[in-house]
Amino acid sequence: MIPFATSSSSISGSDGKHLHSSASDADWKEGRRITYRDTVQSLGRWIQQLGIE
Image 1 (cartoon, one colour):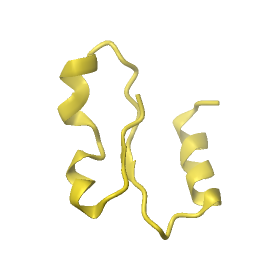
Image 2 (cartoon, helix red, strand yellow; image 1 turned 90 degrees about the horizontal axis):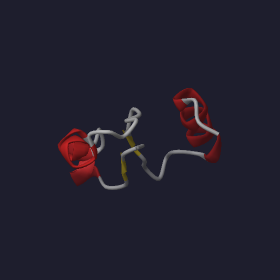
Image 3 (spheres, helix red, strand yellow; image 1 turned 30 degrees about the horizontal axis):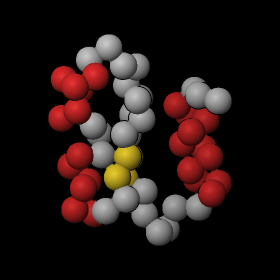
Image 4 (tube, one colour; image 1 turned 30 degrees about the vertical axis):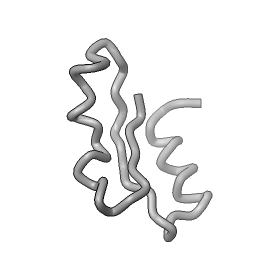
């Protein structure tokens, strides 16, 4: 499970911790807030760091 937020008002939920109880068996990855400043390259690096394909 890869949580993310696209709104600055959602930054506290971008880690997904409040969702863990609803999917306790999931493989939780580090989340982040995505903004208009993010580039395709920066998002690609984030995905690579998560170790997914």
